Structures are given as structure tokens and as C-alpha cells.
Image 1 (cartoon, rainbow, N blue to C red):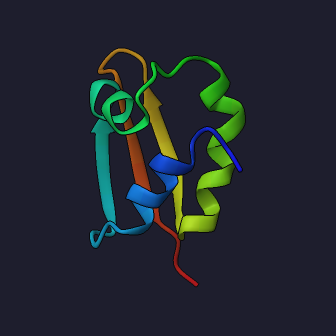
Image 2 (image 1 turned 180 degrees about the vertical axis):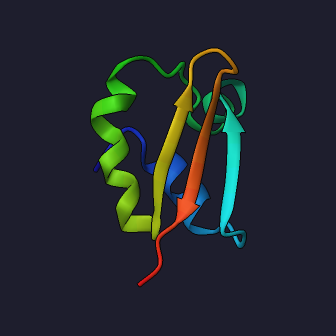
Length: 69
């Protein structure tokens, strides 16, 4: 079980192919602030059928893409 499971569950339920979430939105889903450890955990996102495409530190936003099988 990962501390990011609430985020992965949210992403898995997403119906869009590409989408983004701000850091604030992600922190609301998780109930804790994200930090550099997210870079280590982002590979877990693949189990949802999505991948982390880009993390914008300037925009404070994470971009997700649906993986095509």
C-alpha cells in the first residue's frame, strides 16, 4: 500500500485521456503536501493505466496521459 493510493484511485476513475491537476488539487486528494518523494512514487501511476507525463514546478501542475495498450 502506497501513501499515494488515494491519488492513484482518483486517476483510475478519470474518464479523460489526458488531464492535469494542480499541486493544490493533488494535496486535497491526498490530505498531505506533495514533495520531491513524488518523483519516486510517480511510476506507481502506471497501474492506473495512466502515466505522469510532466511535472511543472513553475505552474505547480502535474500532467497525466492515458497509456495506450
